[in-house]
Length: 205
Image 1: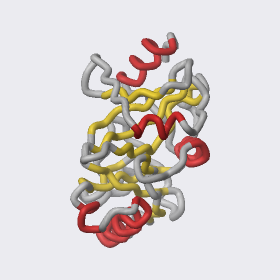
Image 2: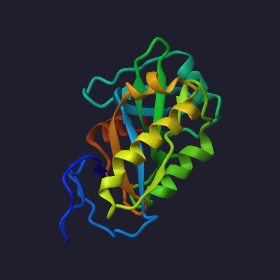
Image 3: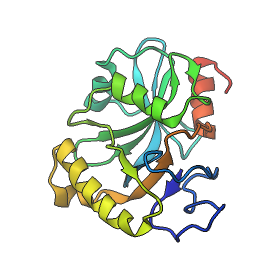
Image 4: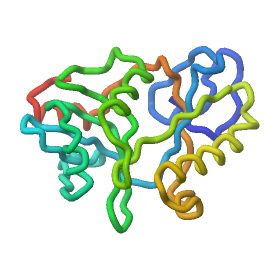
């Protein structure tokens, strides 16, 4: 996983500076890399407990924070299986919105050995994109053409703003960058996800 806008790559070295501590050095083939927007927000997870109730839990503290409201009721309306965790961000606007981009656990199953593109399908197949729950658009990237990333980002901002139903000028102020992912990359559980799983579901990851 890489953060766009960094120096160009050298052969046999990471293509861009990694956004997460782990670096994935993989194929540069077109179609294997996807870009999605990174928004100004609070990072955390959405966890569905044994009763089907959704809670938002922040990453930046061992003190997990639950945020109730219409946005979580929208998640619960999808009738998701218990012991499910989505990686997401909370957008703090007048009406809180969720930006959900990965599935870390589904029905109690760890997804560490599931490729990114399959985990993303669990998001799109089980959640409904609406005015409060946003699912990022993923765009193909051809990383040898690094000079085109700025243009690709601009096009992705416009396309995503249209999908989310808010004006482009308003939406672009939420955008802080772009994350580029390989479709075959695997998941490494962040420590806070382990904490949520162990404290809520008694599952040790």
